[in-house]
Amino acid sequence: MNKIHKKRLYFIGFSAIGLSLAAGLILYALKQNINVFLTPSELANTPIATDYHFRLGGMVKKNSLERNTNNLSVEFIVTDLKRDLRVSYIGILPDLFREGKGVIATGSLNKDGLFIATEVLAKHDENYMPKNVSSALSSRGLSAGSRMEKHVTTLDPADKPRDDGNVGSAS
Image (cartoon, rainbow, N blue to C red):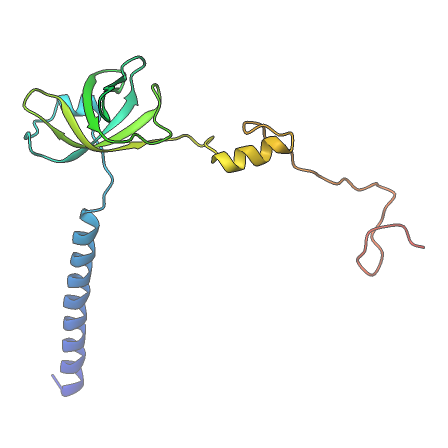
């Protein structure tokens, strides 16, 4: 093996090691940011330690929200329409938080099976619209739920393209 072949072999070897190391570091960094959540049904079928921090996702069960009048603590039930799980949270709930709507709560289970949330995120559907956009539409006579029609201009068959590429009758 001559010098050129050795240099190529070293270059390919170091490049492969460098790329493998870079890919490993990227995957390790992304592992922390994966947004996976468990539903109450999945949680019932999965043994989880009481100090394990995870995300719980589902719908807020109707008529389950209980607010404490003395402080910011709330309790509600998260359901996936198969199983329910009671959640306790101390803090200000998001503006989009509603019974019957989607929610993702981050926290852990205590020994009694109560989910102690440290963060609550309200999920919204594709029809969500910020208040300022909604008010701007309503001031123009449009409702937030209405769809704006696309204005299409149709050409009269009498209008024929001219040689310069413009549409219209030759004058």
